[in-house]
Length: 252
Image 1: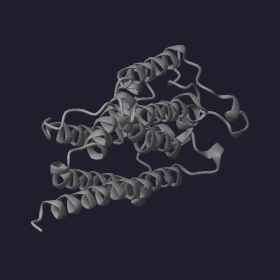
Image 2: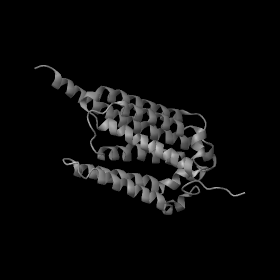
Image 3: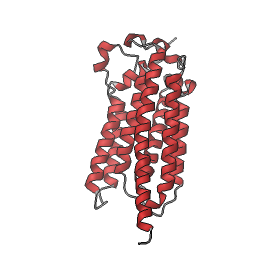
Image 4: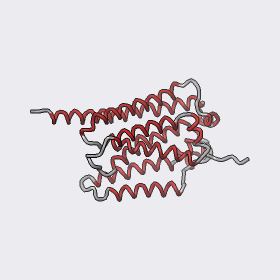
């Protein structure tokens, strides 16, 4: 019976991690095309185009680090590395890419905000449940379904959180607050669990000096603290914009 290796290969040992780059040509080409398309789309933005180009390049370069560096291989061995890969995509690459997107019409509806928030909530919780998570090691398609849905919904959500009309500030405040609360809650559940939840990592963490439970708790902490900090900053930013908007609207 042939044993199918997960995407990124077998779980690495500490001595060979630094040579375990992911050189998948399809992924490299996809990242280049996505970055090139965004740079082309913002070429005529006028004021701020240069800054958007820098955000775009930084965002897709950060995504390339998550997908192509040895983090990809390490995520096969450690749940905490997989969470770190997701946090790089969700909390670093996605907001940078979102800030580089072209400015959309101020007349658009807030449904994009709530659609992005709902999609991100469902994707984050679904893919970090034991059965869906373990299934990503058995199928390349499921692996990419996880990352495309998480990364894509994060870009949509960050676009609305960071680039919205002043009159949306109240709803953005609510969406940002709910997001950092549920993301922090998931991190807390993983950190405070009294047993390992993911079957795949029961035999892959020992080489790294961690028990499966310690690895899971570390992963939960990586999700818990940075997520709350960054989304809390976004919420406070929206609150500040709301206060400025109300101050301007108040009669002299």
